Amino acid sequence: IVQGTEIEVNEVEQSYIMIKPDGVQRGLVGEIISRFEKKGFVLKGLKLFQCPKDLAQEHYKDLKEKPFFPKLIDYITSGPVVCMAWEGDGVVASARKLIGATNPLQAEPGTIRGDLAVQTGRNVVHGSDSPDNGKREIALWFKEGELCQWESVQTPWLIE
Ligand code: GDP
Ligand code: MG
Image 1 (cartoon, rainbow, N blue to C red):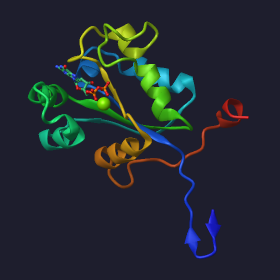
Image 2 (cartoon, rainbow, N blue to C red):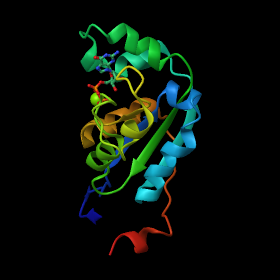
Image 3 (cartoon, rainbow, N blue to C red):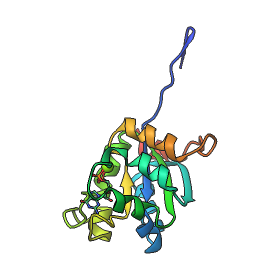
């Protein structure tokens, strides 16, 4: 929307979703992507990526005082991850529900962690915890030009 000299960008909410190395190793990539696709969110970015240590540390910087932090960094950098940007109104909170509780033993059946994992230290997937962190994390994991701007033909059948 262009109003006078100020440009107001109407941004749709985005979440950074990442399949962790255990999800890739266990052959769960298709299964996990499928859950977000079927829900009706729109995929704007996707890549398989070997995460360097400094990026993992920056991504999880809020947890750097936790005793499990070194193990967490080793885990996230132990093999390739699948980085994704998913878009849609309410995608951040909804994706957290689809993913389930941090501890997979406490995650509800029907959620990704509830169905596919047993331990917090191997909980197969990451999802941003706020729209602001969604933006921050997508900017951290994707370079300029790696996201695609496209309209899904499904949108009029998902949103009235
Ligand atoms: P999330 O937002 O549900 O992923 O959970 P947090 O932001 O609290 O933690 C980030 C990630 O750190 C989790 O998904 C786990 O992979 C890991 N983590 C959190 N708590 C623990 C813990 O107590 N032990 C271990 N080994 N890993 C943990
Ligand atoms: Mg978190």
